[in-house]
Image (cartoon, rainbow, N blue to C red; front, side):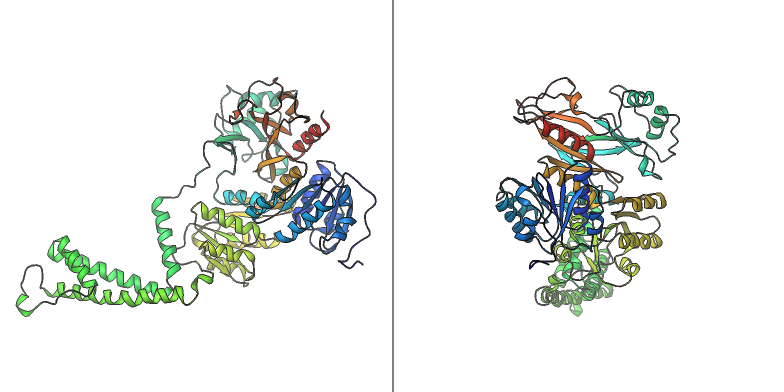
Length: 604
């Protein structure tokens, strides 16, 4: 036992290895990514061998060693041979702890490649300036768009230059697609999906498939195209094809302007008033409007009615005298009743306004989570306000979509962040069904369950479906087989894994590659990366034929050195060799990008 933690003996002499610090799901996926796809020696530093994902990490074939220390200290870094390592990733702990550990690692090995997981992206951008060879990434920021877009049933997109790449399925595929990214899609068996299939080659079925999606080929429905390409394929009515397409702008969320206005007004009213004050205000306002309508009906003069009503509201109207009973514009019993109603309602507004000011400024109302009100409709319920849940709420709120947060832990860090956005929050550790009812599930458009526990997320989905069989459900699930069963059992459901979406970007960053974003094809991940042809890089002299790999890599665009601002999409010259200064944008699978990285690193 060491003075810093439980510890283990230092690993055997090793060099040119990669270190993963953490025992969470992202550490597990990242270690697997490095071992399986990059075939790199990996040493994992975990805080506790018996907790979280550490037992699974120890069972990974190819991991050179698993070292246990309660925190990343100087002694722990020496134990994992940081001085001879090529790269180190900090994917657990708080931002401050990761920054301190990264600077310590750089002190031991100035040339080491450092990747930090940081929730605060602005702080991460500033920290990168302190690191000689490092980058800061946010796993939750990488994954959140996929969850938010899935909840809205709209395509997840990645911005490249002035365009947005997204994946379209079957009948949504248009003629301007860049490439086919998946075929043999069967929602009952997502394991059958093939990513980046060859569009020409030895198989006649691939040739027929290419003719369906060639430059001049017709676009048929996904099922029809699949049957034409491979008559023997019996994937069923849910099978199909996915293609990569570009948009000029990020896909818009279609919400009517009057609904947006109603949400804003209701949110503002709920923020500044309690239930009782709202009842008083709405009752008084309704009485004023009815009295105004009666005055207008009796006199037929809108301008005079408005003038008199405003004076009555301010308490400045003069009462009728007995001799004016039959006067023009005044008099009449119903008219007097209406004016009295308006006057008394006007008297009510002044103390109500004072009560609102006292409640907001004196009672600290801004410091309390808001509950969803009766006007909350067409909203998305986000279950779990951890890092991912907070990002999902922020993205939906930024798109103008009403959101309700749901959290069982009153100490969750995301509650304060969501509260700062003015988003209603249900904080309760009671039965999940009751929490969902309080979040107004009956009037919601989707439920996004992104807590850190698969069982809790599945429970949220089942409880939501029991109450609303047609509600859209998006789940955060780590286990792939578990997710496959969910897809096969539930309709109108989407499943995503935060670690699965983020790990490829962290692994590529460890290798010094820039991943612009990730796109989901059900439980599979497609990486969009930009590779620079630099002096000494294995990329120089290669052409499109050399780079593309069926099932692994597709070239999407080229930026030539002489015109770096121009993206040449679907660059037609497949034999042109890359020159120094060129940059190429590719779509790649995890293994495809790893193979390409090996080629570029070895120079052949």
